[in-house]
Image 1 (cartoon, rainbow over the protein chains, first blue to last red):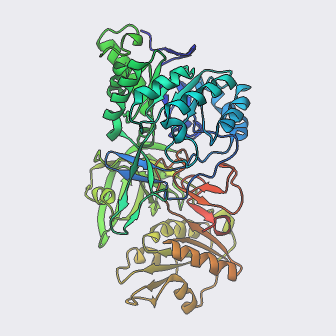
Image 2: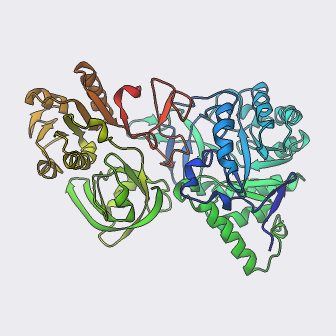
Length: 300
Length: 257
């Protein structure tokens, strides 16, 4: 039985990865789950310099999920290279560095530094809803997305995954723009923009007013978008959005995802990724599936 | 030791209106230090995130938490009875450093639902032979845990409505009772912690304060629960530090509150 998948020439031993921002740099969860069991660790977004992020409160619970407005706080690419990559390299898993920035120049500065490391792939965060300048602007206009993808791709010595925002009218157009810009793969969905109001204080719960909505409640939206995007492009799709168990992950794969990411549910059970990987294997046994690729997009 | 485990409830009692004492039988108890906390997960699938709750007491087999059932999650948790199980994540954070106050006199200041973690701190200080007094600030005459403190160390009380002890805050009680010490261990609402920080600075005392913030992961991954710092933090490399991991207990002068 074969659980391994190939994304732009990089083999993942299984299709289960972590969603950026929910797993730190892997270190924080390494005491509670075996990183060797992951297809890849997708690290928290890193920029050319350290970012302080947004004021608190940065997180709030909502029905079946949560809102976050961290604002991409990160220690900067130099610390990431010195501290986080060597730690992750001790494990038998792929490293996908999520890259954030306010401008094309910032993205490229970070990528050029990471080109010289043994990170396996880049995931471009063009779609964080919590950063005022840049980020989501790159992710909401297909022309800007395509141009940015081209610039990033030209600077990159490693495969480039572009993470797509669901906060668009046509996910298909954004997927096509990423592909036209040279992306080696796309990942989706990033969080949906949400809001929560404290009715007793008559104030926004998050200091940022709005935040990214994630968790099991968003899953049907995410499955639909993965289906639409994967049917529009030829490049592989990494599907995510509310995955809490293997059944959820298989839904994404059947919709067209080559790999899947576990996000918010890492907070609820640090073992979720390992359980999802084991559950996919059990499903394949049950239905005599020799190779996971047989399942990718099998419902159409 | 950080782990998600299932723990059996051995006690769930209401000590005062909405204030519950919960005891859990768990292997994590043996690792608990004063000032640390655990995350308790609601079981209702609509409420996913763990509720961070401070450790009020621990022995090798049981953790005791005294918490307020204020929101939907903690109200749900308070509905579970002896014999039921709860999923918990623990033990989390850095607590009070008992070694840092060796040979000193410590004033333990607890305000409202910040009172419970002071009990375990008092017990650990006492067993380390460190002199301490407890000053507990209540809203009214519902003086939960007061007897527990009195069995460990000299205990003074303040209440906002004046129904018991000194009328006013823990700082008012310190002044009224003319209490002296070298360091504060404190936990309570932000206005109290600010007052404690200012009082300590004026009186050349050390203040260790326990902070609270909305958090998601509890283990330092999500960066939801940061507090501003005066210097660049060694982990984040910005002027933010993680309450769940570097804290919740900080030296007051380190954090910008």
